[in-house]
View 1 (tube, rainbow, N blue to C red):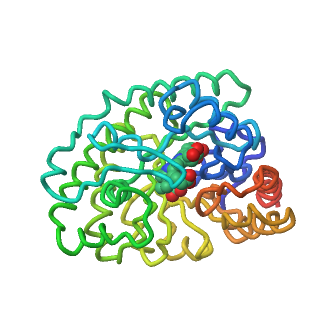
View 2 (view 1 turned 120 degrees about the vertical axis):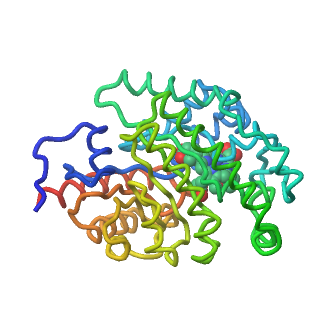
Length: 358
Ligand code: CP3
């Protein structure tokens, strides 16, 4: 039996205990993409600055990060940036417009060969943003943990090949079928970039790293083992060696067919969508890691009663076992209500505490 810590924990102890699967006073809660267009304060910030400018100017990144922290009272802050940021210094053009991200696509070896892998020197503004956010968090009572992140090599490759968010991802599928060597060459470069990029964020002060493999679930298990797993494993090995204490969270969307194979990643926390209950994933993966999630994001547009029910169901399903971080199964959407996100956090805290003190 695990014993429940009787005194309230500090926010940083609670988060790292959940990642390590140690007992908590209640599971921590935060919301994927917690700073975004569903907030009027974020839309006002966007009136003043383009999205990329917010990412590139540390004081604006700080402002976006803290608006989510202050309005939602979450248990973790996440660096305001984007997964596509490291693609620009590799030599790709990256922009964002109404239709989402636009990347100059690379689809052959000649173009891939030209990509640079020494990008950290050009991403100093990300480290500066982390330093500034850490300083702000540290000056407050019960400072929150700060999460850094990157896209996984496979998900970054998907954007680099597709040139943006596309429906059927046929350019990527053609690479898988016709040009696996070129795809491997690109993934190799991305894995070389992502490790040091995350390490830079840790050195600047983040407490944990989340790797977003948003598109890995497009692959069959066999393809995933060839094109995603080994490259993410390389990043994880790099980080473990450089920062053995820093928890690594792996986010997998639409990937229930990859469970239990996902256990081979050896991350600390697996973050999953809502398609299967956490209790089932926990059994299928042999309790190999903590789980983060997994409330359906659409509930953030529904009634307060529905949100409370969804959060309570998620907590009850996982139960008072160590190793749960409450979150959505995917990012919060622009049509969500801020009050809905606030309800989500409040119910997660109240119900989580009741569950753990029972
Ligand atoms: O608050 C936070 O969580 C931190 C910031 C954050 C953003 N993007 C800000 C953002 C994080 C962690 C991300 C991750 C991200 N970015 C992912 C992985 C998570 C997921 O949703 O699967 C992916 C795939 C991206 C790529 C990306 N960035 C897309 C597809 C888009 C356009 C669609 C959309 O959701 O807006 C973006 C733009 C983006 N990233 C915005 C924000 C707040 C909106 C840009 C704007 O203000 O116009």
